[in-house]
Image (cartoon, rainbow, N blue to C red; front, side):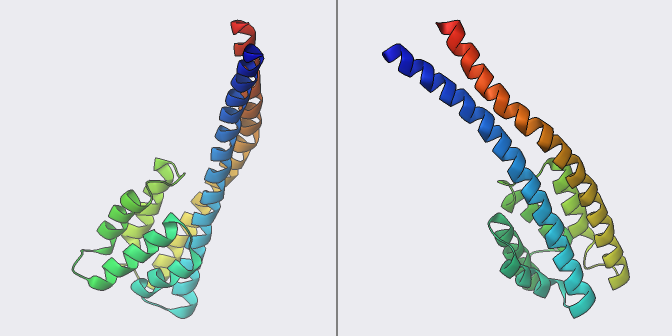
Length: 172
């Protein structure tokens, strides 16, 4: 009976690892969509409302959630404070600090940092073009990630189950 329970627990544990890996991939893709959406919100604020960047960051806290809400709040407060430095440095520091728990890879974080380093310094048209370029990069990254997630999440689940069964067979 104890042996049977041990076998069941090994299979459940390995299956859980496979499903957890697939969930991480899903969350990463979801976060990439959020980042794209946040960039579009910023673009809309610049184009339609003509707001200043500190106001946009504070306003973004109403649209963002989780660690992103903290990111926009910190950036907005530090920009408004003026004593904290220039926007690019603030954006970079907050990306590294506030987005530690993010599912984004370093490449996407670097793109996000590049966006922040160049916002606010350029004329409105150039900022909008920069946001368009960021949007295109995110579309391409999301497309690649969707394909990867579709293939690898199924594989992760199946491998988790099969590894559990394999370990049970080896130990039996």
